[in-house]
Amino acid sequence: MVWDTRKQASKIWILLGLMGGLGQLIALIYSLVSKEDKDRVFGVLFILGFIGDIIIYFIEKDKDRYMSSMALYLLIGQIIIFPVIIAFFAAGFLIPHVI
Image (cartoon, rainbow, N blue to C red; front, side, top):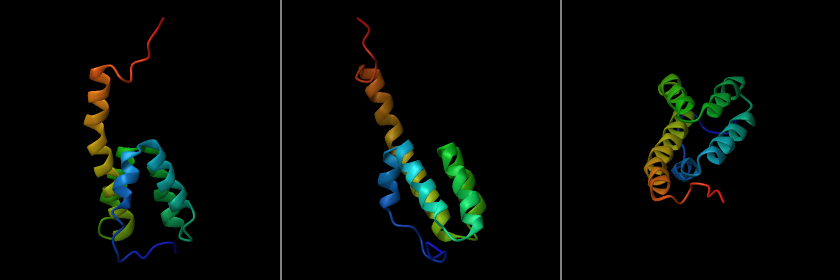
């Protein structure tokens, strides 16, 4: 197994959550290299973004502390970055300029 299910994940997953889709892709790859079939199946839910994080957290919160905390930390990172992205759109920084 790639991780110890009795321990929580590192808080580095919050930083990966700040990266949005790239962080979700890293979490997907990380779970797919697991030797447990259960981890591979639940890892595919990371494709769904924050909805997948919520599903994984609630399904695994009592069974697998590492995977549930990893999903929670990704969700926290995504929640933190969301208002920042909204502010950039509101300020006009991320809107394509048409000539």
